[in-house]
Image 1 (tube, one colour):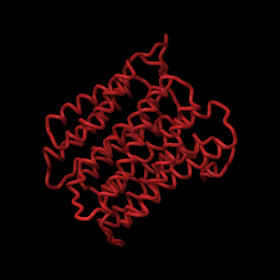
Image 2 (image 1 turned 90 degrees about the horizontal axis):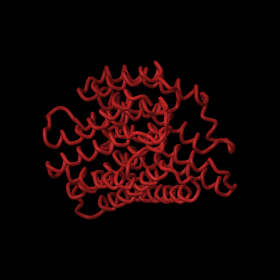
Image 3 (image 1 turned 180 degrees about the vertical axis):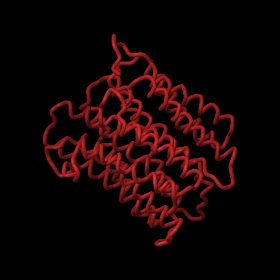
Length: 368
């Protein structure tokens, strides 16, 4: 990835975190900065990196550039609640994603059913499908909530569905994890376990989202527990089978964040089920869950994708990982409640992002 793209994406990521605190300390009555926080990281940056990574071209293509430009307009229009513009922009965004997906794979995702298809490619295509379907679903929710009122549900909110744009980033990071596992020849039993993990994770996330909408807590626990077991299984396979290279250290840390989000997710569901539940009492846990997912797990994946051909890079990996965990698990969530810590969270996150994106490599040449 060239230097200009690295500068652009790192600025957007840092800006996204800043917007995550703006709503808390400088709230506007009619606007939600949380949307910009979500869009700049997940859709504008994450979605563009996903498409760029799929094409694997030295220079960003017109299709990817058009998606990025459109995603910025999408973010701004959704923030200002200019929903006709948001709906209009959704159409080309969907077409851009599907164009690249079909070029890479096929119109129908039949690869999901092929035993010979690498699990990494299954996760990759699922990531693209999740992005395009997410755009469609968000549009349907806008039409329902703002115009037609087909369905009335407490959890059927735009912000809930906009959070769905983080799922493609999780899936593409898992694709990267499995691509490193698959570099070695694995036994049939391991292959079966890998395929099972794919189906549990991809279907489990969808089913879990449905149970959130209909507010069924017991099924949420079962689904989250299945997801937790699947993620731990991936973690064990990754530790045992992937080559010991620098990328592995960062992705191992990323899977650690993912396990942490599963644990906090289960704990949050139990709190919701408890007598006398007050959302304010569980606010700290929810923020830990969100920060670990967005700025822990997803950042690890995106940074490794952007720098994959540059590794090994010159940095103190253990130090960067420690600061990353400190920022995502401690400073970020506490910054929601204590203003000065928000500043330290932004500084820490900027340090991590800039270090991962711009540390020089140990080779004589850098891939563009």
